[in-house]
Length: 136
Image 1 (spheres, one colour):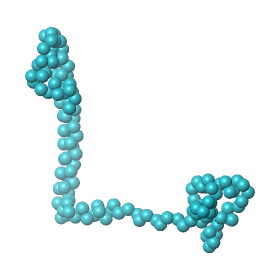
Image 2 (cartoon, helix red, strand yellow; image 1 turned 45 degrees about the vertical axis):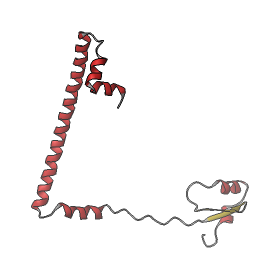
Image 3 (spheres, helix red, strand yellow; image 1 turned 90 degrees about the horizontal axis):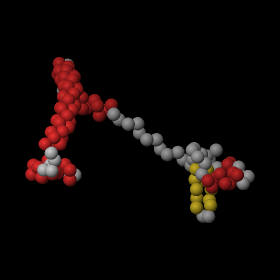
Image 4 (cartoon, helix red, strand yellow; image 1 turned 90 degrees about the vertical axis):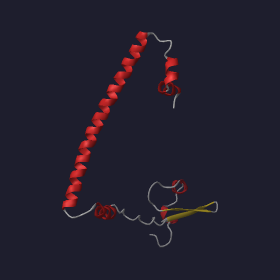
């Protein structure tokens, strides 16, 4: 907790901190604090109203479920089967390869062309020279 909040929430420390304030300053501080309290109460009231609407809808849906002869557990089975993700596809096999300084570099032909292939193409070579046999 910050030092300010620690002083504000501790009775004796708070009393010592405001000891130097005049009565008018104390009343002004109390008015500001009261304004903050009122605003917070309004926020909580709005939040409770929003939650009341939400809870009423939930109760209505639960009543519909019970009237249909189902239970919440039945819904658990349905939601788990609905949320199944598509299986990931296997990575694409490489279509091109080149060996530079003993290192084999492969590329699928998708996406941005690797620098080593670009350098070779810029120097006049054709991409067909780097095709992996059987990947035409």
